[in-house]
Length: 254
Image (tube, rainbow, N blue to C red; front, side, top):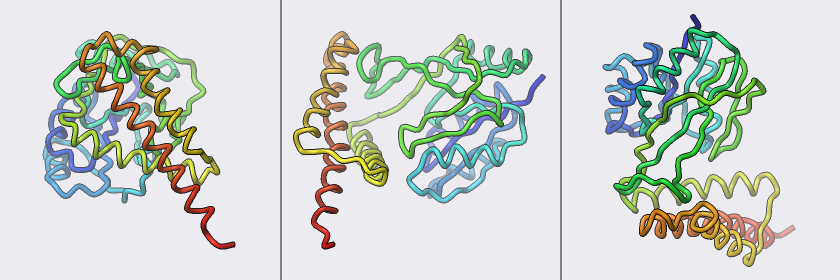
């Protein structure tokens, strides 16, 4: 049987940390919390409930946090969970089976999103497949925000789901949207990307069309309408911030 660690990234997650640790401990006792400077009771609660807590200063790079965790793990496999995610009983069984079978693969599972008191079935918050379980030595992460794993092993989808209890209010969404779009825009700017005013609006409108029409957001009723409008705003905001960075740079004297 192979050994497993569950990694949880945190920053002021006292509302979630106990439940996610309890959930993760149904798979393994090796729980690693990478905290980026919580000022609430997150760290104390994590320590009290059996997790190992390691601090890494936040540098606006989610992939760096996940890669840092890999340097602290002594087990064969790693499973990443967000603090506001909970594994179903079927998924926990599937993860345990992977440890018993010991086949070198990367594993995904479906994630269902609950936001604003609604469980989405369509649109931008529709259930999606996420890759979260890997042999420790076979994965690394890239992108500062909306990070993704890089792993060359064969893929397998596990039975079971993880429920993602995300935004509780519009203000919470707006705060994160503002933060994430700034990280995305700065990263894109540093990579030499540019955008025009017209292109920024086109990206925003396509974001709405993709969420509401292509991904059938309209089938979620009013919840689908406002989630699609949110995606329009989010997409426009990140490209507009990139445009502002480009424009500011052009104004600098040579």
